Image (cartoon, rainbow, N blue to C red; front, top):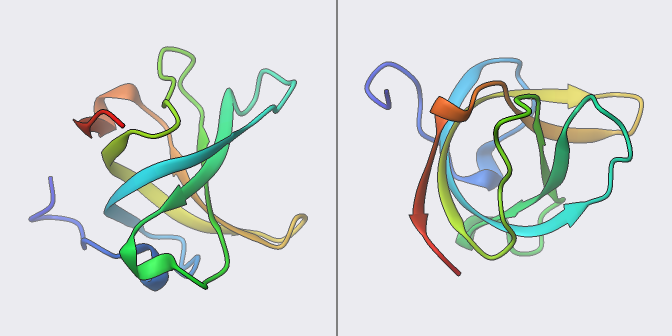
Length: 102
């Protein structure tokens, strides 16, 4: 998967509306209280200290990321203007690999 799509550190994710691969820790889970997206939270890696938070959204009801775990994620980076956020959208559970339990 990574050969076809660019691998980025979170500090380099800027909402360009392209598919990417990142390795990141789940630092926080937000309560979305809705069915779409199914989950939302904040990702972190060594490059993102002192940077704006990089959010993730999960659109697959069969996927739930856990706080403290490290994942390899294939997703689409985008800017969500309404909340002024840069997000990584995860559409399918098959696009996430657990690398380390925190």
